[in-house]
Amino acid sequence: MNYLRTAILLAGLTALFMGVGFLIGGQSGAMIALVVAAGMNLISYWNADKLVLSMHGAQEVDHATAPDLVNMVAGLAERAGLPMPRVYIMDNPQPNAFATGRNPEHAAVAVTTGLLESLSREELAGVVAHELAHIKNHDTLTMTITATIAGAISMIAQFGMFFGGGHRDNNNNGGGLGMIGTLAMVILAPIAAMLVQMAISRNREYAADDLGARIAGQPEWLASALRKLEAAAHAIPNEAAEHNPATAHLFIVNPLSGRGMDNLFATHPSTENRIAALQALAQELRGGTHGGGWSASPRRAANGPWSQRQAGRPTGPWG
Image (cartoon, rainbow, N blue to C red; front, side):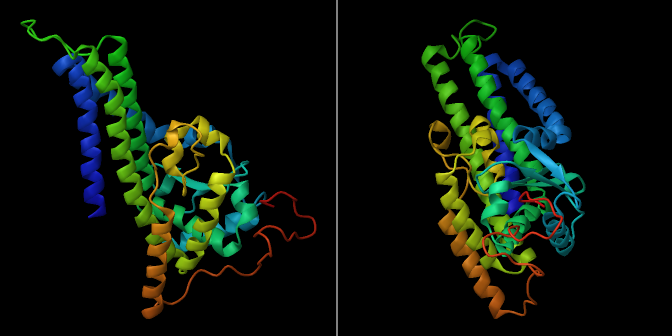
């Protein structure tokens, strides 16, 4: 049902894009809009992960530079039945994370330094498992396409405003949209696209919470992490996300501070509701024959998963 709902919403978003094109240029405008959408999605399919990671200054790490984090991702990916994704760290004080990539074979998980410094190993495992769930559900591709089409709708609406909006039919009976109609299109079309984008994002977040909790085996780990992340997201700004608000829906919690209009509509479901769903899942797993979760051993730090250093190790949060 979740996949059906997502397909319907994506179809609606594409239809909205073509509708805006039709209002601007008639049938030819609708066809041009369809071709533009297809081209943008093709480019996004191959390059979206590189673009998003670059926007947020993510640096790839490996067993030599971030052994604890990479080993954790590898263990959870194996538990999820996924290929090992690439692992990135963003030098950003806000605790947050996202996954990207066109498919599980070309996926990446990116976490911030703030996340590594503020969560326990168990909580971090819950967050990583959530991101792996997005990869397993192929959400990374879906959300990239959604963001691309939504952005294109805003662009084409502005294009219509620049050229006066509307089209005249062959008999010159129509006057186009007119100034009021053009203004309405410029304002309402991006909002409608945003609402569809948010519906898809919220839908997939609940699914990733559920699957991620099952991958980790302990829903309480993710629930505890979400409490911390929600509080920190309001207190610590994420400058990269503020400059690239179209990527906000990729993160596990909304990274936008709400200082501008970008946060007028929430890109994520209520954290309180997500935690309640995870608590209900925890009760369900305890009542069944669940065999236990991924092990956060062998090392557990008091303040964060990387605060206890071994001799000779790098001193950064990923060493």
